Image 1: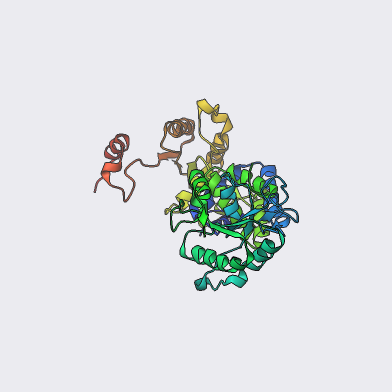
Image 2: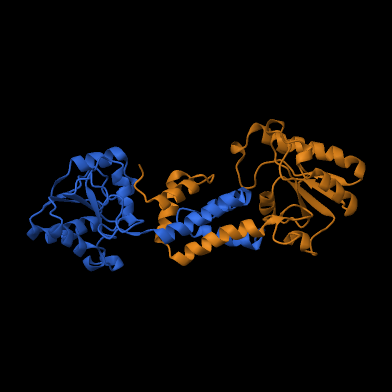
Length: 198
Length: 198
């Protein structure tokens, strides 16, 4: 039997379910909650629900957005001829730390036969539509450097061939087999500037 | 400038303020929130506010409680002649994993001249009152083994002297399961001077 009151116990249980929060961290967070001012915890609770209420996917590139278009698609100063294709919106956060000035397209996953994810579950048709309608010059494929990311890049480049657009692949500056959000800023910059024709 | 929408940014900022949650973990938790079902996050937000609304201090021992008395003070099967004095309610959680069957008294801190905490800021008068009114046989001082915890134990034992109650101190020694060469000199000296017949 736990030595915590019920409401503390159930908070700890919920926190423990969050990946990257183990049972010990969950307890520490619960102690912070117990100690903190009531208004601080109310703000935190509100921030959690606000994220679920306000965040949608950009209608153009599927990045996280609070309006119809994400702030990158809304930014007219960015290079609108170049889009960088990533698996997840969190990859955008990583790439934005480099010097990349184009826009993005989020696939919302990668081709993965093991998880039953084929091209139709990804935002590939939407990408092809953008290439046709947005007069793009270059599509930079920045899917991850593992087998599935590679297969996804391959598949997309095949689909793009008839569309008369330059297709490039992010360079192997990123360690093979690792996922984008572990890469440091420098590595990402090098990988982008050293991109090659696919 | 961050690449997250505003509401995600402000969630990450709030999470980063929690001790034991670094900026990287805060980002990971935010991604969990983005991915999770809306009802899961609503439950989490509710659990956070429930803790602040429901938890108070036990009116007798100052442990965490959801009613006037904590569940330990409410438990008639526990030894009501023995109370264990701790600094914080989280210490109770640790001690409850042992076989201790008495009750508790939470000081809500320790004497610390550096932080400006004297005996009057702690629940020491309430302890003396309990010793007088609850017909206790033994007070086990389980404040921490550092200088301030030691001074606090010393101070309390002085206060308890006239009250005709047995006062004991939690033993110092080698942690069970750890090897001798990890123990510091101080701990070893205490473990040796506190040796018992085998």
